[in-house]
Image 1 (cartoon, helix red, strand yellow):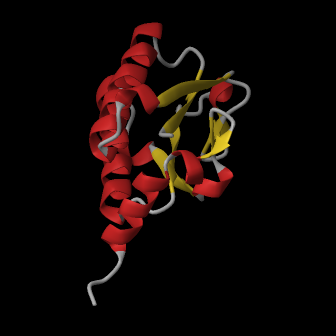
Image 2: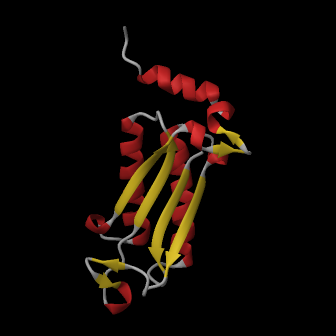
Length: 142
């Protein structure tokens, strides 16, 4: 399930930087979520310098590229995992792309397992045992 999108401006980063970001982010995602890396999907979404702006200035007109990421997880993941993932993705963007930390933005998007498909089947069915275990772990003791 883990899916990440890194929104980047063309020409601001090299192919090597993008490739390293995808590989390192995939490993990070698997580690933080304790998920097999085979489940991880990572993508770079590229925008032309005329198609992105920071602080109201289009990049082609002198704006500073400001990377943005989305990380999709199945609902029920502990808040600590989600916050760690956001922090570590930010660290990777700063380290690998040389982005200014204060310009990096991102969000963790939780998806209900009934609304996510794995091989054409709802994740609620395909990952029922995992989803139930996470739900049980987040329930307060009685």
